[in-house]
Length: 334
Length: 116
Image (cartoon, rainbow over all chains, first blue to last red):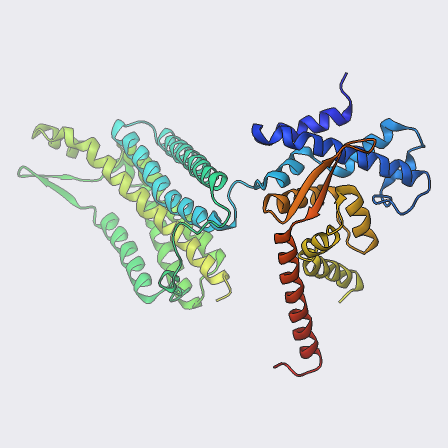
């Protein structure tokens, strides 16, 4: 059976390159032997030996196993000792590359994850699967690609770090040109408020007016009459609340987390039922669908609904996200 | 500020101040050949609190840089690796000592209120 010391020596050696082992082994053995000797001397009362501040007093003289154990405990993790011997870094991505790593990862995630999520949802809309399934697929695809990106980028940087020279320069030299621009305003701008109110007025107008659908010389209602009582009223309410909210937020002169949350809820209150109804084919009146099919344009219905659903998801999603970004800028001490 | 905090800050600042002094201390002590554990004992007596798992790799690094020469001594009960400061190591120690003197002079002059 191998002693603890043998196992410790092996623990160090296996973590250093093969060609250094023969050279290092006697050195570590001598180190352990000397430390054991010093500790035995100190436990006999020779206070001048190093390491006597630790728990040497517990070991009765001659209790070799306990002394050995105490010495190895003080020497610490053999892999740590090996890393010190070989000047190996004990991190995946160190200070010279960390900022490049974080920027690249952030950039990739903010570009690729939304694109993949939206593209997956778009494919789902085209295929006409249920709205829940579309949302789940989108989230799953976004998460998967995010995890993959994080893994591969980290792996590449860890490899570069592991092989890097001692004085590694950042991948991209920094200059003052790369300074971020100061965010101009953290309140709801007048332009944004006007656009938001106009959009809500437009929604109200379309619902109230109930646009007729002229096709091939005939006129049919565009919206499904079955919507009239329940869902159209819901969208009407949401649009009116949105106008009130926009005016209140503009008047408050300061965008807050509360505003961001209300903003996101309103966006969801519009987008989720709208996409669901579109996907269920309950928006356009059966007469209008029949007319489209009569003139041979029936095949365009599903893709058009998919594009419309996608547009709603993108606009509502961006609206909600922008609200939170704005709140973060405000909270960022400005 | 609580005393506890001050002690912590002091320990941290002292650690940073002393970190670099280990190399000249070793180079000067090893003008007389010595092995790792004896060096640790000497350093402890001189007030340098250094652990074996720091000093041994440091000695090996200095040897790799040519600042120390080493030799296995097999005359005693156990083989031990003895280090000795090389001529290059002497030069390094001299440079570091000169630097030490300059820093000391600068700090003193600042303390005296004559920072020139």
